[in-house]
Image (cartoon, rainbow, N blue to C red; front, top):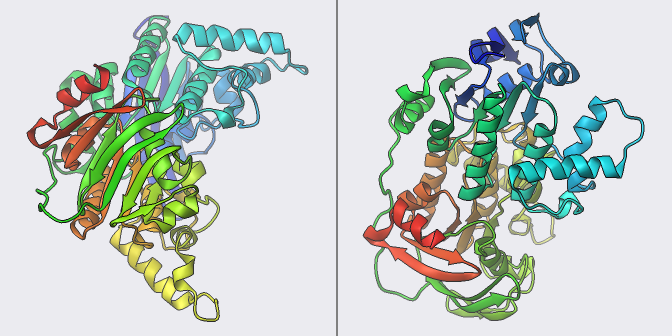
Length: 498
């Protein structure tokens, strides 16, 4: 296979849903050994194009050419047989099966085996995990593993097969810097074997580090395409959004004086973190960062009552609060947007309105304990409009939303309750750059009204642009606090890995 051989082409693909054109004459080609970035905001058509290439959806018109064979459409099994593998953003794993079983499942099915062998499954899983240089408990059920490990399992599963085209939809979302570099090393080895990779990511610096070609979709059409060397992160962002995207610090100076909104002293949980002490002012946006496993998420989970602390004190609005459960956390004035919004933050089969009202039903009850449906409807319509959720109406199912809009629904759920402190864990994971800006604009607006905001994230540029202070967590301890002019990307990264 030569480096110039075309392994995949899509020509003039059109797809319409209910009169709305999701893809408008989209064309794309991949050569063997090429990493091709597919960029675009949520709702731009990226996911629809991936589903058509992988056979999940049928195009209204156009042509798909895989390995020189032309198709009006394909099927999932046909695409896999032709060498097309997809790592979807939602992982599509079996939570009740082990990591090893999930990794080897597709290859077992592809070989049409009637009986599975644990020894064979284990050997296949061990081989790919060793190849990637990962450390995963292959005997653990996927339901018990972290988001990062689940994403790594999805990557391993896709790479077990002999793929000619590998589509990675946000593959680095939950990976640390070192894990991303290991993934990139694997991608480069795949390139050497002639595998073409479609790399879909909102992390534009990563895109430029790994890709040879860039294609940008906006409103279902290709608006830019060319060699990666001709683009910068800023120019890609402008093509995606149609406007210049600011990279400057966007937070206003805090007013000094007054008692702190939140005081945390010597908080700890055995095996997770210890001696966590910090404060949060009214109107402040506080960032907490660290490498995966540093204890950054566990601190927030202790404040909210997901996994209560063993030691220390938590004082909110001048009152010490004992938080032993989620109910205690909510009653103390905390709201929490979890890292995995799909499984922990949303009722996917319920409507937008049902999700937004889920945490604040009590405030809509009358003296007879009946719900005031009219008041609920007015409040949900107001939140829907204020957070600019892109959907037909508040009755649309959450499952139908893009990542950025789904995240706004989770945020709306807590804003309706008006917590004193809103904590967000990975608030823009899987969210496009335009939606990131809008989500942080919402958070800045809430902070300006006196709410305290805590952002747990490893997206250093977004912390730099939007936080008044940043705490660095390493090995379960807060090891550094950065404020003012010291809040810079290089400074934060150095302190995270010191």
